[in-house]
Length: 271
Image 1 (cartoon, rainbow, N blue to C red):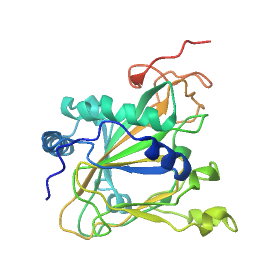
Image 2 (image 1 turned 45 degrees about the vertical axis):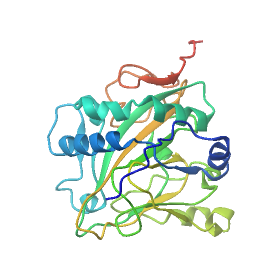
Image 3 (image 1 turned 180 degrees about the horizontal axis):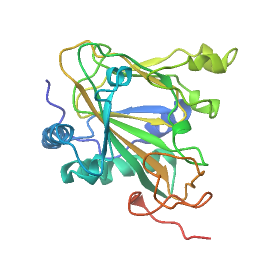
């Protein structure tokens, strides 16, 4: 594994912000220092090797889904080391700059391991249709602990597809073709972009951007942390979700509280 550049990226540039807003995704290299990358790998290994009482591990012994992903949701709740990366101010600032928000909150993190062997691709889908939010604009950081390319599960994006609007929730284990919902549109004709990354680099993508991950054909897991950020003031739409169930959120009210910390910017006053 190659070492990453010690000159870590601290902020996204104006050019990266413009690219993101046009295309719905952007690549940002070297967001981790060499020391941070070493810690990141160690903490993910520890977190994924244990069963915890509060974070939720999925994928294991779940048939087809396990071949697509093994994941742990809200790893920060049970591993202080993972919290360092889930709450990292550098990443939250980048997310806020890309969104143009006054503040950003963490919706949840999830460790995403694409296991070796009989791995399956992650099918084309949108994320936002899974999240219980009224507003659009929430995005994901996808931070890799390994070099990723087409052989072990790198991502692909359809540029501009965030403008398609909310479509349908695509099952990762029993998918339908998302492009059937955009026939005869510019989104069906747009060529997908493959984004290989070096370890310690990341992508950000809008929750409505069509994206896909290749199968892992290597003999090692592909290890990623995804942080989901939402603009301060994003409101709850009342639908069930793993991290909002039981939180006594009211439909139409902002998603706030101890599980959804403000990581950058400022909190807006309640009206």
